[in-house]
Length: 108
Image (cartoon, rainbow, N blue to C red; front, side, top):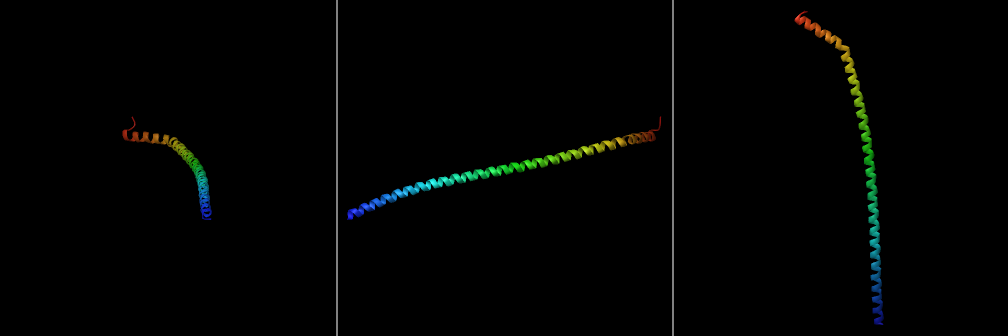
């Protein structure tokens, strides 16, 4: 009877050890699955962040291009205005300079 009890105890200990190994393996698999899932979620998040940053950069580039085009257009208009004013006033300035020279040096 004592031997039977000892055999049952040994058998129970073996069963417990087998169960412990199974649980340990299951935990290892579970941990790996969760690690892989976390890694995948991090990669997806990183891709989303990258896409958002690229989209934002594209928007900023478009905005800067619009501002550049506007500034170039304004500069062109100002340049044309200056040319018109120059052409308009060129003759009167030349006449004024000629008159001043005549006044200072006399007509010869």
